[in-house]
Length: 157
Image (cartoon, rainbow, N blue to C red; front, side, top):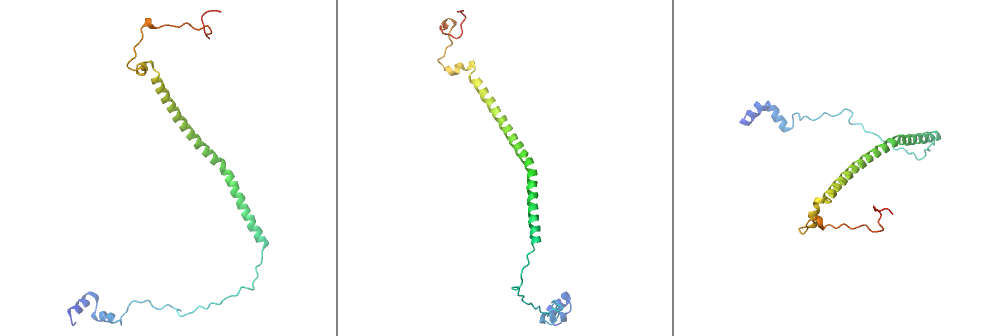
């Protein structure tokens, strides 16, 4: 132990010989070992397929066409089975919307009729006539006799 640093290395990290050996690169540096059969090379041979002739299998094509047709037929049948339920669902939703709109329109009509009844009330006569309106006396009212060609009359013909 030649120095204080060597003493700390010896206390903290083991023996000073192992420490100096790892600094110099002589110690174990924890590298992976070589893999077995690492030196084997793979030989790839190019294959020429230009002389190969494709064989056509008509049964295979027929099976594929039959499967495609069956799948299409099954999907059309499934859609045909689900359409009435979808239409009834859409129709019920539309009926619900129309009922809500009807209720809203009925409420608006009731409000308009109420407002009309308020405006046609005889108590509103003073509001319509303004400040210059005076109620006529009973003697000032003149009743006119019905015309000869009246629709309703008390005289017998």
